[in-house]
Image (cartoon, rainbow, N blue to C red; front, side, top):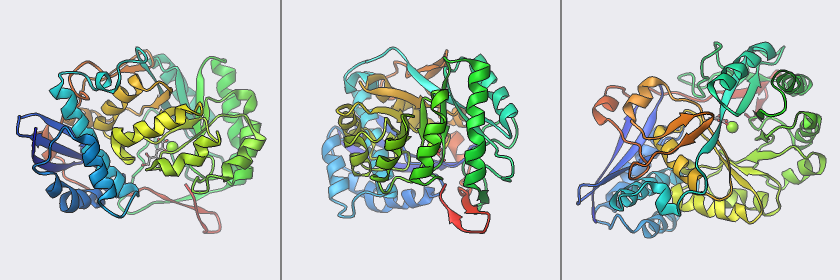
Length: 403
Ligand SMILES: O=C(O)C(=O)C[C@H](O)[C@H](O)CO
Ligand SMILES: [Mg+2]
């Protein structure tokens, strides 16, 4: 089955999303997500100039060989742009293979390890009260797990908190990066009160998650993890930047709060020590940014050896194509932990009709052949690309900080 055409579709039905479509001489096609938030056109250029011309004429069934060709053959290995481009090709080819077999993708991966996939939703509020109302709304919708984030008194802006209650927050919310302000001391003094309030109102059964967005030093992360142990978090995410994987040893020495890391990783080498030394509990690296199913399967299998479970990234900047493929992966992967879920806007769902369904705090991927997500190209064309950037973060004295 030969690849006869490969094209990139950029659309902005509320936010920028990049999709790769690969067409074969048998009329089957597959699609893959190629969205790298705030750097979308870098991946488009990489695909159009360096990858797609080399795909034409290749056998669409040779997924592994094509993966190795794109990874080893580039000479310049790894990095988010390269690995997102490879992921788009890989997921589109798995979609084609599963369609050719007339099977839902999870069957090709090895079949179901579970009936449904638990997801966590996002509750955000300007303050603790506002956040609690949003947790209540999520519980009513059926969520069994909720990520909680709230504004911090004395800090004017907090990333990851919606502008109005009941709305989603948008990670890339301005043309050029907005400037946020950060104060670690204020955050550390306040945020444990949020978890105390959630436990007090919702009891012990609700799974609570929290994202620190890389803002603490390792010893501060240890302090936070220890302080929140009474509230039994499902996980504390990205508590410190993870380029230095060894820094997590220090955090582990101080707390038993489970740790999740990896949404910005793009390779097994980014998380090898974290996993091998059991410095984390959940690996968040997902299909679109880490070379697709072929590579993330290696990460998940490696993680399984050390009892590290998956907890894939699933913010709205990962398109429904990634969500659909991830849900098939989650249905199969033996060491599944949880899946992030931020609902896409209605216009996005219209552009990407999909087979996956939400019920009672869980998703099922559906039984359509392939990953079950399609793209309406005519509709996609009605929403042209619009530059949008993620914010930057500064301390009150102006120092540029992590986020
Ligand atoms: O969903 C999360 O956990 C995030 O941290 C969201 C990220 O900031 C967002 O996807 C960046 O593009
Ligand atoms: Mg995160």
